[in-house]
Image 1 (cartoon, rainbow, N blue to C red):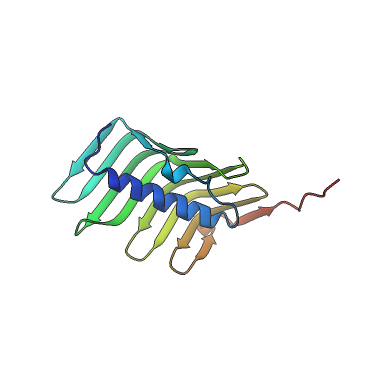
Image 2 (spheres, helix red, strand yellow):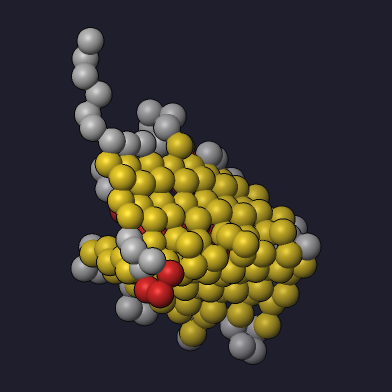
Amino acid sequence: MTLQHPTLIRSLLSVIVLCFSTLAGSTYAKTGDENQPIDVSADRSEYDDKAGIQRLIGNVEITQGTMKIKAEEIAIHLQDNRLARIEGNGTPIRFEQLNDADESIVGEANAIDYNAVDGTLILTGKARLKQPRQELNSNRIVFNAREQTVKADGGNQGRVSIRIQPPQSDQ
């Protein structure tokens, strides 16, 4: 697929990788993935130059190295030719990437909203982040990149749940 603004997709990937890696704590994304080519496929791509919006619609798949994102729709908004906001939805949106130990980091939510102006990423609707030895489930997870904070709340859907595996013994 030819994109009118491939730098928008690179921005999207950088944001998602940064946020999920930071949410994942000490487990980082696979070294070198950011230097791999980005492949994007979707049923449809629309770019509105006047509004500054790139839309990827239907069976959206974005890959870069070991990182894979699947969504129903991704909208990338520009303001004054700069990244302003990324919105996405799916049933759910899925993110997967290996870390340097070849362990899988998996995230998903029904919707994602990244505000590049204030540095917040909001995952809503059955939000889940699973990494080796830890899993976070919540209806809503808010990550602030500038403050390096994560807040989760169950809302009307229930409670926040966190599972932490005990350290493995060397036997």
